[in-house]
Length: 99
Image (cartoon, rainbow, N blue to C red):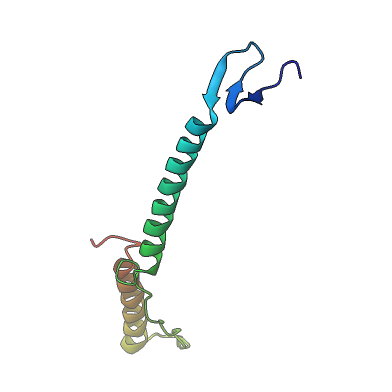
């Protein structure tokens, strides 16, 4: 096994015979990392499930209109209102900031 790390009496030793770590040290690090990972997963799940932090916006209906050859004020106002609805939803979802 020249050149390979090997375990000897619960101690990991490199090819020169130098002790790298004991099994208990490795287990302690593993336990600490496992605990931290579990805490991070809990925090992430909390953020994902928190509807107030990332609320789902209500649907915005399609602007279903045909513009006439000479657009009326009502047609242009409908477009303006739709753009305002989209901007409000994007701001509420914190995708864009308020001006």
